[in-house]
Image (cartoon, rainbow, N blue to C red; front, side):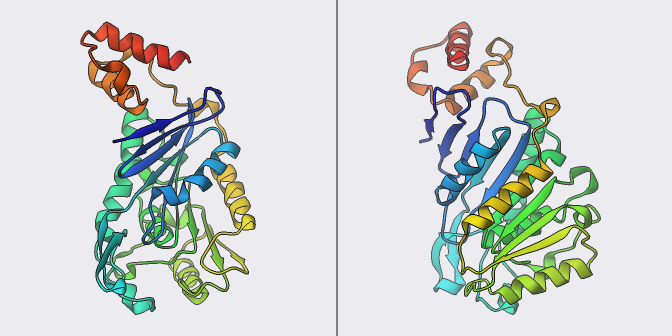
Length: 288
């Protein structure tokens, strides 16, 4: 069951936690950032970082999906949250990446859902991720069509996965990309990051930047600050793009029920059957 937590302060975003996704959203937003976690983690693992970023980027809606639980060969076939299968840590072991195409479709679907439901342009959306999630951010964000080109890609401690399946698109060649990596990383070695940089630049990526930190497979405060600066540069606040929630009176019954679900108002809605009653419940919650 989804849980909903919010603050009465208008400046605080609402947090909707569902089994496969966490959404952190302000009352109105003009940009979207999707954050993908690493192997064996979940949306909860990056929620604190997203909330920290949300304080500095109050116009951004953050979506944190949780990867499907599936067997991972590198870990003896043990099921765990994973965006694709990993056979080993050496670069040749990562060539097939079974399941990465399905994860690509899932993440692309999140972007498309936002675009279709709110009208937010793809150019106001960013893909980001850590480790395996960072790899997926590159794989998904840099293969977009021109009309679906993103504002940018933020890869943290990641690498170019599924190289045999990856083709840098023309749009991807000019998509701002920040790759942050620890020079002492024993999991995703720094030389893999360097080879990723070389491969993408050789393929024609002209807006790729690498930033390094003297850390292992983790995030540093300096890196988090650099990430926020990057996001502020590629999706600055833009009131002309603000997505304002539809007034309760303008919603269909289906939209009202969805607003009630997302607002954690299920208990208050028990026994309400008339549309006017649903409208009042949603309207009251919007005015708080």
